Image 1 (cartoon, rainbow, N blue to C red):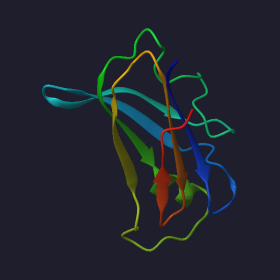
Image 2 (cartoon, rainbow, N blue to C red):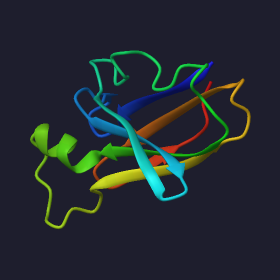
Image 3 (cartoon, one colour):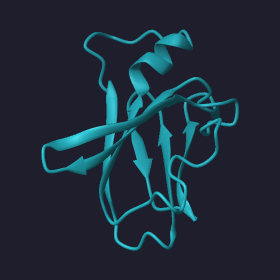
Image 4 (cartoon, rainbow, N blue to C red):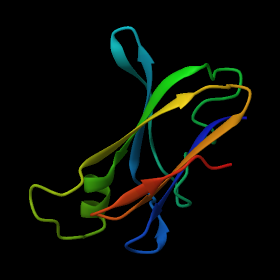
Length: 117
């Protein structure tokens, strides 16, 4: 249960170790930052879940992935302005009793996501 993410670098065929990820929750004043992390060598939050089951509530959330900085740190030469900078994924939690896994598959020029398990 809870909320998790996993990022795979499809350009290099590996987890996106070191990528920054920020989690936001939608409130009446807009999106509010909950936490920011740097992904571990497996492309996951080093502390496990982003939200524990008991903390997860129904509502709208945003994950922001630092794609540009990640690829620059890997030595990828990118034209400025870059095609992708920060990838924001806005998604809803309808049933907080279920597990929500939000993976990101990313290159400097494309990304995809889905609700994982």
